[in-house]
Image 1 (cartoon, rainbow, N blue to C red):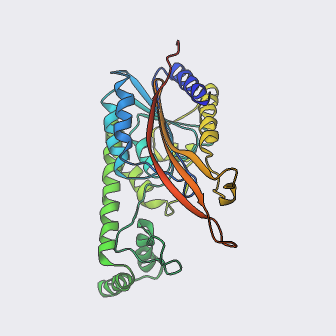
Image 2: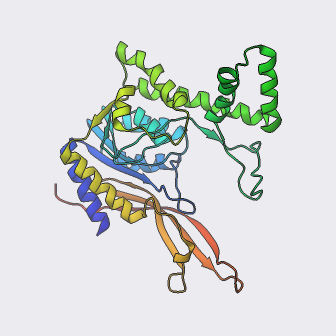
Length: 333
């Protein structure tokens, strides 16, 4: 019944927008039910888009806290193969790589709850610093803003200006962080700026818009200082991002659809292992979904409780699933 309800709302959105709508939702829950934007969605989106044929307008209903930096560029190019006008409908969170995808859209529909974020990136390489407190855990990610903040502090606050002292400061940094990891940070930052620029250039075509691209990229990639900073629709509009405020009827439909996914995927909820009992020995929940009027794709994660020694916490077995596809029964328009 839930799928039928979601598809009905998607069709209502299409009627209001005069478009075809694809919903793309990734889980914002902590591990083990976390999911991010990844390249495996490209083939899935193709299946949805090819069913539309060539139409004027396509909207992506988007909820995600981010993921692979390359996904927005590849996905935006794919979507534009099938339409002249690309829109993004944001019910709530569209962070990091999801913000980058929105930059490639002709219009970004945002409501009072909607939020974008900075697009500065982090890197995980074999050369990252180990986690001193938990050596068996993954290595500590390095964030672009942290490296830039180090040098901004040295130059702007401490007042280091001469070349020799800057070289000394850099030496202190490389004593703690491997030089190849710092190189990866620079490369990742340069790539993020390049892709954000290319995404805006897809639809910023007049001279005034073109002049705004560099400023928008500077703000999102460097000048907000904190990766978890959230950007409301009002601030996004001031930055020059192509935001459209949702009107009441459209806002109601967007939030109705979001609430369906929120319930189905238990979005925003922490995972409590105590939920696994003898009566409920496993949990099987969708962590990413792609849906349109004729097709539904879901990927699940399963968590099982394994027997443990008396007095010891239950052991957890996490199984990442494969994408599952199903055709949506035809409905009359």
